[in-house]
Length: 348
Image (cartoon, rainbow, N blue to C red; front, side, top):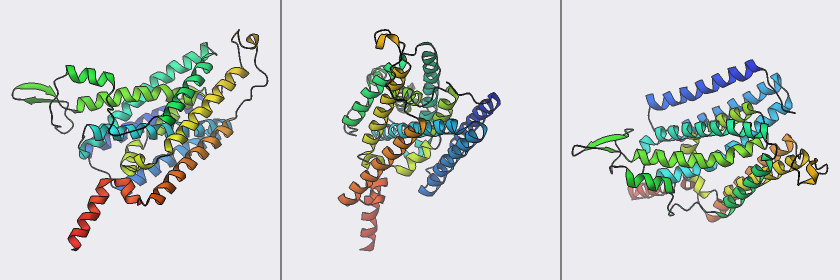
């Protein structure tokens, strides 16, 4: 049975969440800068604390099941957003986006991601309401995504441009230089786009692909559109600061993709199990529910998600330690090495 929270709570929460996102955008526009590690840490901690407070409110106004669904959904979307963030890093590197402009670019990417996820939430909720068999499709798709996630590599040297970006690059007149946050410029009397337009196209099409596995994954945890929306917004909050906090560390967390893949596969199992338990497809058990199919609880899902990400992160950090890479080098990449070299030279 689908859970329902009071309408006033859902409306008020939606308004507050949108206002927070607008405020975050205004901060970027009014004060463009490169956040320090301390500033980024404080913002990430603030958004995490905000999500936990929201879960507490859902527990008090709704019940433990509401709170559990939100927490499991938020952690799932947060995990997938970290993988999304990894691709953002590759896009920024590939197109050589100036570091001083990366905050604005990231914010646009996050807003595009939110729009795409909002569209898929509406579509997903409509499909689930009208076609119960869609859970079979979602489950199979998540299995495919999990396998691709586990066995594909994020190689910065690979061509990360998708077909759409390559198509648009050939048809747009694009200059070679960035000019702040401008999309258009004039060179020798000719109006041209700056490289920023290609970056936005790359971010937009990437966000679209991530929404395809993100939304089915969270619908495997809850069928409440409001909880799905709230979990996505909270997962995207602080993503910009997380980018500056983790930096190149994402590239060093070797086992993180396996943790995410396991979560996707687990939710795929949960979706298929739920579909079997409520089966109406004629050629499966004569259109009757499969009684032996287990119903995986929200709290089991929450435990699996937490354990998977914890194990993957710890294993990655242990491997870093064994390989002799310091945390500063892991986070800042070549910047830390260059800084150390400069200090040694100065010392001599």
